[in-house]
Amino acid sequence: MTFTVGGSASSSSRVIGLAAPESVVTEAFFVVIPVVAFSPAPTWFKDTPTLECWGKIEHRSDKDRHRRSTSEATKGMFVFDPSYYRRCACKAPVVDDDGSPILNANGTPKMRMLEASCPKLPQKGHGSWYFYFELEAGEGGKRRRLRRGGFATKNDAKTKAEEVYRQAVGGADVLSDATVGEDLHTWLKRKRSLARTTKHGYEEHINLYLEPHLGHIKRRDLRLRHVEAMYDAIERENAERLLHHAKVVELKEVRDAAYTAWVRTAGKKTARRLTRRLYLEANAAFREGSKGKRKITSPATMHRINATLSSFLGAGIKRGEYATNWAALVELPAVKRPKALVWTPERVEEWKRTGQKPSPVMVWTPEQTGQFLDSICDDRLYGMWHGFIFRGPRRGEMAALPWTEVSLSASWFRISAQVVEVAYRQYDEAPKQDSVRTVTLDSLTRDHWQDWQTTQANERDQWSGEAAWVASNRVWTHENGEPLHPDWISRRFNRLVELSGLPPVRLHDTRHLSATLALLGGADIKVVQERLGHSSRQITSDTYTSVLPQLMTAEAESTSAVVPRSQQKKTPPDKEGNEPETEDEGSAEEAPEADEEGPNEGLRPAA
Image (tube, rainbow, N blue to C red):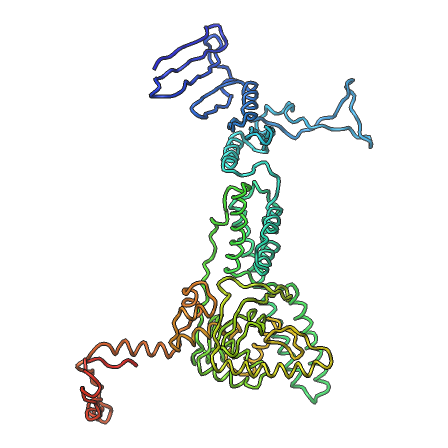
C-alpha cells in the first residue's frame, strides 16, 4: 500500500490518497483534511459532525456538507448526515426600516420570534436543540427533509436523530403527521372481507379502548410504553368498576329487603304505607346507583384487544407506516380456556347453597338431560330443543335453517347459512368453511321434526286467512311464520331451564353436552368434530368434551382389573369377631369352566 500527498503547506487543505492492490480493495479512499499552515485545528473543525458511510470519512464545513447532502439526496442516495442547531422561543418587537415598532390593530407592538438570533443562546441551558437531515428523494427527485426539535441537550438530539434514522431505514414513514386514531379507522375500512361480527368486535375495541388511549399519538411517536400505559389504565378502570359493582349489589340487597318488609305488612295499613315508601326510596337509590355501570374488562378481552392492535400494526408494517409491532411485546395476564364441568351431585348441592356455578361452561349428566326433556315435552318447540341437545348446532345455524336444506326421508340436514346478531339486528351470513356440513338425524329427532312440520303447516293454515303469515321458509318460526331471533332462542331456553328446577346451563353448553353424550356412546372423536363443525379434532377433544362419572368409573375399574392377583388383602373381623365372607367361598361353585367360556388367562373382565 502506498500513500500520495497532494497540496502544499500554504494550501487550505491536503488530499491524502490511499492506493492498494486490487486484491485488497477495489477502489481508492480519499480523506479531506482541512489544514491552516499546520497549526492546531480550529474550533469550527472540532464541532463538525463526522460521517462514516461505506468506508468513506469526510470532514467538511457546514456549507460544503449542506451542498453535498443536497446533491446526494437529489440523486437518490440516503446519507445520514444530520445537522444540529439551537433556537429559543424568545420574542422581540418588529420594527420597520426606521427602527420604529410596528403595531397591531389594537395598538399593541407586533412581536417576532428571535429563534436562532437570540443573544441569550450562548448562555448554558437557554433554548432547545434541533436536528435535520435529508431523506431519500421522493417522486421526481423531490427533496425530503426531516426536522425534529425541542431537546434539552445536543446529546439528546443526537440520540433521537439516530433513532429516527433507524426507523426510516426500516421503512417507517417518519415524515407523516398522521395519528394512530386516523390509521385505525383507515385500516378498518380497508378490511372489506371481514365477517360482520368480527368487524363489530374490531369497532368496539377501537372505539372503547384503542382510540381513547392511543388515538391522539402520532404514528411516528407510538412506542411500547404507550401500549403498556393503555393496559395499566384499563386495570385501573377495572378497580373502579369493581367498587361500583359492589355498591350496586349493596343497594340491590337493601331494595330487596325493603320489598320483603313491604310484602310482609299486608293487612296493616299504616305499616304498609311506611314500608312501601321505604321500598320506593330504596328502589330509586338502586336505579340511580346503577347508572353508568360497565362490565369488567376481563383478561380474555384484553387479549382480544391486543390481537386487534397486533393485526393493525402488522398491516401497517407491510405498508411501511410502522416499524415495530409493539403489541407483540406486551405481557398480559394469562387466560385459560374454561373447561366444561359436569353437574355432579356435590356440585349441585354447592350451587343450591351458594348460587354459584363452578365453571362458566357446565354440562348435564344423562339423567339430568332426560329430566329436562321430560319437563319440556309439551313445549311448542320441543323438536328444536331435542335437536340442540343431540345434534349440537349453533343457535345462529338453527335459526337460519331452511326447509330446502332438510331431508326427513333421508334423515339429514345441511348447515350452509347462519344468522348473526349485531346490536340485536339480524344478518344472514355464510358460516366459515369448516362449519358448512351435513348432519345426520337420529330416528328420534327425525320423528320430532316430522311432528313439528305438521304443526307448522297447521299454523300456516290458521294464519293464512288473515294474510299475516310470513313466508320465510325457515324450519323454526313463531306462530305467524316469522323467523326466530337468536337472542330470543337463548332467552327462551334459559326460562325453560329455570322452570325445570335443574342446575343452569347455557344454550351454547348444549354443544358441549352433545359432544359429551357422543363420547359416552362410544362415537369417534373425528365424527363428533365433523358434526359440530370444528376445524380440528383438538378443539373438540380439549374444549367440547367432558368426562362423565360413568366413564371415569369404568376407566378406574378396567385399569385395576388388568393386573392379575393371587391373594387379596383380608378384611379385618368385625366387632363380634366374625370373619367376613370371601368371594371365593360363595362363588366357587358358580364359576364357569374354562372350556365353557374360553381359556382362562388370569384376566378379570373390564367393568
